[in-house]
Length: 121
Length: 108
Image (cartoon, rainbow over all chains, first blue to last red; front, side, top):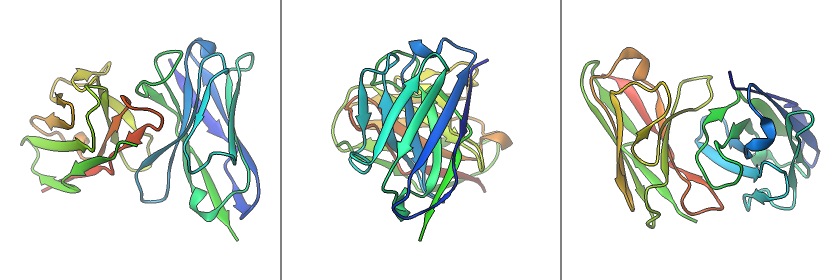
């Protein structure tokens, strides 16, 4: 059974940093591209970032480019999102989501349960 | 960036009836469109990909259609567990991936 479990969400001050993790199990982690998608309280879904199965190729939404860094450790079956210079508008539940292929673009076939990031002054 | 617009924002339907949800794109991108269902406090769940292919385990009462800029999700004979928020997602013109703002399907 495919499982994605996020962790690392917390309350952080404006301008601070946070690193999110997503542990994958039940599948060959390195064979699938992974993404982060966020959802602000009461709002819709917003794609944040994606990474290929090998980790060589990465992409970012304009809203986070230069502040967030996506990475993965295939030996640990774990996806990361390093978030720097956090703003109030980054407050959201962050989901990791899997593509059913090694490279983007494609749809998201499995999602984690999410981890809440709250940015406050 | 392709802008996805869903309508209506809220749809009130009685159990057993049919629901039709629409998703319109600001520009054409073939059939690379997915639909997700999200219930309160839960992660989104994939329902449809490729505009019309049901994901594994999705009941046959869910169907998708459309191409280009106009897409539809139809739920025939609504069950109590179908009342949720539904999002469309285009993956044909990327980056970025974009989603519609969601349609809330509520019990009438």
